[in-house]
Image (cartoon, rainbow, N blue to C red):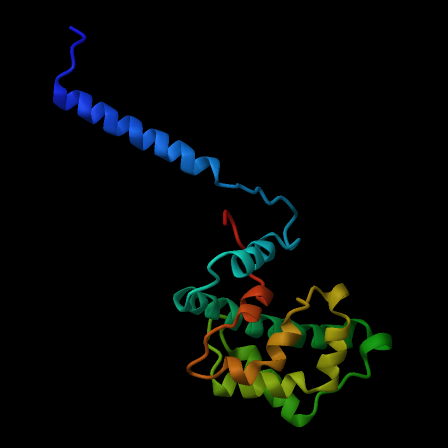
Length: 185
């Protein structure tokens, strides 16, 4: 009773060494808890820390952000297009003067009928670029704070031809500016 065999003693010492080593390595680990309401920048701060003080993003990580960027571009332009129609009708004094060119109207129809989860290819990009050049859409965007349009969308609209390239890999800036819901990062 209470006697260890030499094999058990060696195993016990090995386990003790592993536990002691794990404790020492944990002493150097710094943990942060990010708290804040949705949209307050918790994930953006984490991405910035990873970019500046960590290893950054590998190409496989970057490629994972493509779908989020594509979705943001399409969803935000669709939203602006819907707002254009609503505001002209519901607030004619403030927005009744807004008009889309014929080319802008065709682009708006195209954007209305595409899926939010589509890849941004050359055709999607051309239609989004056409709409983004419309003064009416610029005015809608200027009122983004009241209309719940993401600030960073203008960056992606301006970069749409680069985003539509087949070999597109998101840059650090693309990753920092994309908005997508995160839980438990």
